[in-house]
Length: 324
Image 1 (tube, helix red, strand yellow):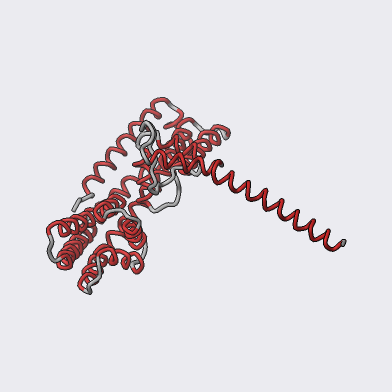
Image 2: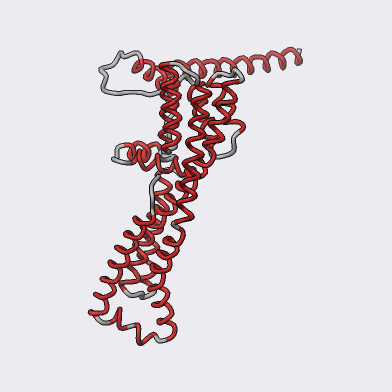
């Protein structure tokens, strides 16, 4: 009798727990927050609203891990262009993280020299460096990545031509390039293939690839592929021509870089020589050089010298920078 009663109690307890669990699952599936959100998205996508709100199901880059900050950043102008710069540089930072680091550097550059009693000119120089340094580092990373992509582009064109001659489709060729080519080329073409695999039209995926990699040679290749898809022709032969053109252009760029090496070295020497002499005089005879930042006329001379150095640096940079 006791055994039957115990078994009945256990079964009754399990039945009550299962009933409660089933009721909770039914309520959350039909009236919970997720169900309401899904119903609202379906309603908006079915155009049963007044059209004042739009919903996208496409994958988007996040400007911040916090939803509120992300929605606020999307309202600001030029944020998309800055996020594209981060994407082209190949860094994993978001816009919010970069702005946080930038603000922290500015705060340190504004507070620490003032607490140490640094002169106003030094504090201003540190503030300018803190404001400009992150952007310069980002632009340098972007330049290195784009240079590496440009150097790998002839191999990509040859790979595409060989794979097309072997009978593969262009989408499969993009996948093969993404899997077999080294970084950063592999990740970019792999992203293009994933877009096509998820339903993005081929033309749009190639346009996105050209937008992520702002190289003239890659745009030539994308234009060639798009024209071939519209009008027909031998795409493999066309890619071979693009490969030969890119190789010839890179060879010419290397020759120009060698011929302009003397001018670049002169620019670096002339630009760093006044700073080196000032630092050396500050160590050997501080009282002699201190007149430049203690006397008002010396401060004006420093500003004039800085402006002249900047103008000369920009002029020499424009002279030795030859576009091909």
